[in-house]
Length: 290
Image 1: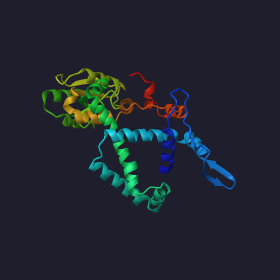
Image 2 (image 1 turned 180 degrees about the vertical axis):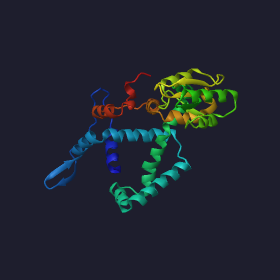
Image 3 (image 1 turned 90 degrees about the horizontal axis):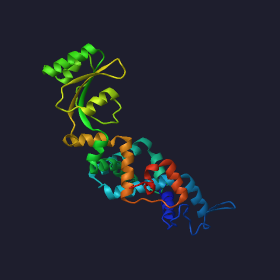
Image 4 (image 1 turned 45 degrees about the vertical axis):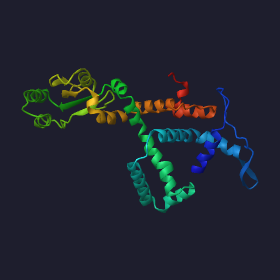
């Protein structure tokens, strides 16, 4: 894989015309790479097949690696994690894994440094995007910290609210006393939280920490939620907010676009452009408005 990727990368960096239908070409496309019987296989033939089957993935992997290398410092934790992953693969696959490395013209060191660590660096990009744009992202996703208890009967919910308002029970105690499996732990919620329905979301989005415990019938008509907004200023729980936001698919996509714009990623080859448009549209920043 490494040799294949290097070959493809080398031909993709050739200067192309700026027109929409530009295409990368190999100056020595007729050079024979190998023969099978009387059949000659040229660089141009191999390049065409690679462009059709693996160009988009290779290009995207290279883009992620280059951006991550500029943005994310390699830490001791990353090195340790990469080594643990390698050790796990060796233990699990044994000689098969060693054969794989040999087939890719790689050793253990290059596998760690060229594949595992860059992957760990790339995983940090959404977190960096959220950190650099914290206020804006939090506002877009209505980030709050709240305690939500769910009850199967209205009477249990009412009893819990009464105990919570007079302070005779904690959230966890009120939940347990009235048949709820809710933990009573204050949790970060966003617009994308899948465990919050519309009725509850309306309350946690509009309430403030000064408001008392509130009870609402949930959308399903068979359960009741007892709710308290604990904090609606994400700066007060920034680390938790960042963790919650970086798990959202839309935020990950926005991070991709953000960093591709920052580094002015541009595709000139029409075939590669079409492949990336089909499978990785978040990377096509050259067509996006600033």
